[in-house]
Length: 88
Image (cartoon, rainbow, N blue to C red):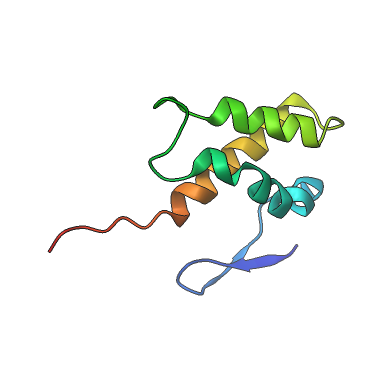
């Protein structure tokens, strides 16, 4: 079993099982980045549908469940990357 380091730098066991999805995740993130830009979207609507469609088009051999997993993971990635600045 592999390990990863959480935000505090503590080693944690890696619970992820779908290694094939991990291998393409960086490419998926680059491909769907425009759909998850902060405070942008398509007429104020959520863009998960379009992100999933882009993933499906780029990787037609993966299952619908895998597309959903990648879409949710990418959304979480971009949500965690968003820095919220609060006024002092």
